[in-house]
Length: 147
Image (cartoon, rainbow, N blue to C red; front, side):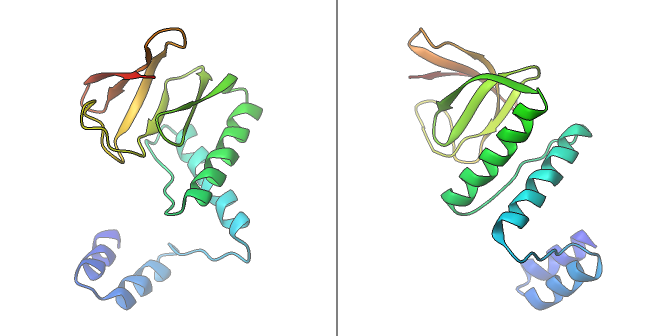
């Protein structure tokens, strides 16, 4: 189904793609945006708990902030994330956690080799040094992110 629907999207036949997604229960509707966001976060938490490498995506900064806040609240309540929050790079909140913290860059920085949408794992936070964090990319490159 997924490839078939994707082929329709690529060829510009959005109506057929939406029909295929709908026939396979891939489209959900909600009365309120907050309901949709809560379900996105719930699905993200479930996939994450099952070991799936998954991200949440939104197009507006306000929606991104809402999703991040909801996810953070759930992770704190579950005891997975604890400690003081720190804003890092652009629109990323990092906290001390029991497992590696993964995040997605929201900006380009050629001098660091970071591009928008790059997914990294935060290896260490250095609040008292000129390098604020050390991250590892999915292809195992280490990047020191300065203040």
